[in-house]
Image (cartoon, rainbow, N blue to C red; front, side):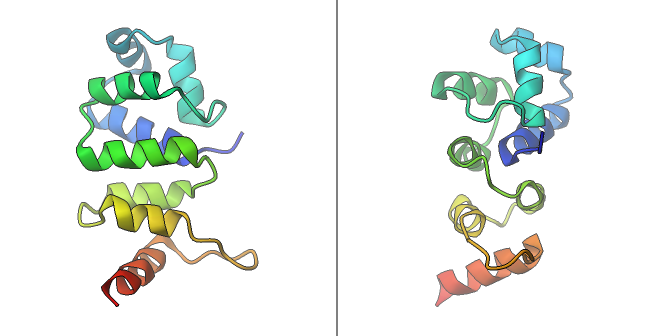
Length: 125
């Protein structure tokens, strides 16, 4: 199964908080196997209530919460773009969602840095 953007985000938040899958699942009363399936992309769209519980325990910022909610509805988003965006706090949710929603012709996608730069330029114009 291919990794999803939401799975990448949840794993990075969990690891950033120093929590194991079991610790996270105990803190939010969700089966650890389900959390694992979300992180690996086997499950793609958790309920709003479940996602809210996860994000609350993970102490997600407003930006991270916005990204997670968008990603829950868009499992096709590029996981590399999620990693890039999480690593650059200057990228806001609007720029991320615009970049993640861009459709590309052909098989080649621009790298995340190029894509974000293009979207930022478009927002400035």
